[in-house]
Image (cartoon, rainbow, N blue to C red; front, side, top):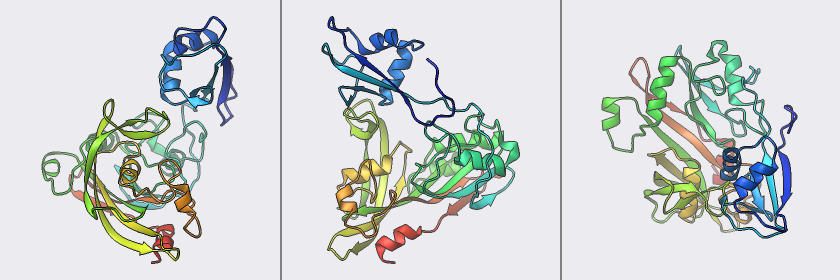
Length: 331
């Protein structure tokens, strides 16, 4: 099967279960789709790219009936080597080892299906011509990421030594009040601001559980009992505002001890206070009570503390509260 390297839309392949039926979906699809191995099909299933009768397929061993419709979406290929692009960056700090930027909402961190150009990686390659290859050619300098619609502080490694130390640091989050990581090696402490619906009860606390792929929708994360990774978030309510219609929104500070995908969004939703504007875990009907309706999830990486990977000194970088937060808070 051939695909157009310039397309940003996935290719879809449709199949109908034959009258004699099939044993396993992954094995059968691999035999039907030329050039696809069973492991490749399994990867697409895990990524939520295969549907059975219009519903996202949860597992390859799902039972089927003759006439059932299977649709497999194939992401377009991602260029192996991103190209530099002249995209403005708001630089907070820079030296020969680090680049710290204030990422705007809407900017994708690295090339991926649907966003092959115009990413932070493309912008950083233009800003730092010698960065290519540090940490790999596909995501040079990238040691952590923020969701497309999350704004705030991000750090990029500009040297191999910085890359190695920062990778260790982001695997060694330091919870509030904990001094072991700071004293003995690389660490990071990440603090976010989230604007949520309602008022968290209690006003502050700590939540710890397992987060993994949702068993009902592979494109979403969820709190699970097994097959997940430990996720811990400390939250504190800073301010609450009552809107003209009587609805309440709260500004919540979240310091995370782990860095799981969608962690804060999942944890806030589990408290009954989803992030304002969150289209995946939020309440669109509640968002419409806000005028104007937010155009993105109101989650902001406000502060990042780390030990410099070469100099060894503790450094803290901050990003101010975005205007869209202030508008909803009435500040």
